[in-house]
Image (cartoon, rainbow, N blue to C red; front, side, top):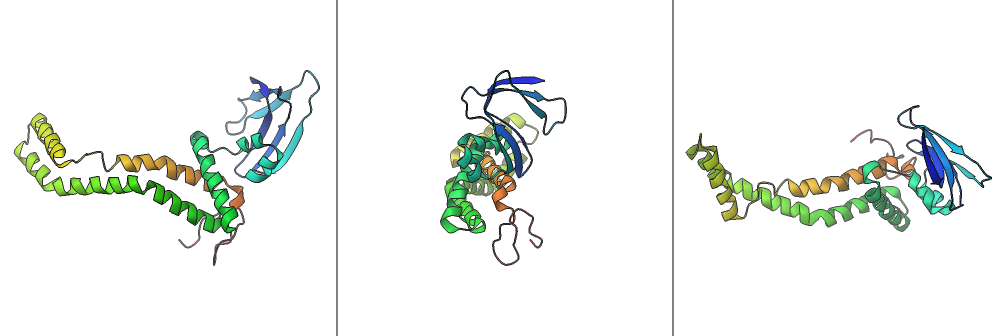
Length: 214
């Protein structure tokens, strides 16, 4: 059993809903977590030596509802290792929803904004890949010329890259840098209870489930 002092809230969560107890006392309370029972949702207990004023909440992990009760309760909505980044993505998505009044269109606008922000990286990657494609015939010539001499081959290939301003990692690195962004968007859309039963257009009546046709 692990002990945590000065705890402000204790919760049990699943994908969309939470049950929690919290206090507005800055001193908090002592929480006990039994990590041996279950792996996804260990049991939590509250240890009280003195009186404490506790409040409870049972319901959806709706960002605005939790924030209205207490801003700290929005920490119940977590996205794993990229929580700090994904929260910003959701705040932007929520702002777009308030602007257009529909979660489907808000997601479209978010996608466009993200693509515009990441365009310089995408463009740089495409340019680098095009350079490597143009150098492919010369690289093949070097491979045939220095077959069996890996050190000389490596040296001449590096000279070729330097001469033409190409980078063998230039096409991959920009793509790798974008992965956390798209993973954050995925986690936000997967965990957002706001999308549950939210309609968009035509046959899409629930944005939280997979499209049955595409």
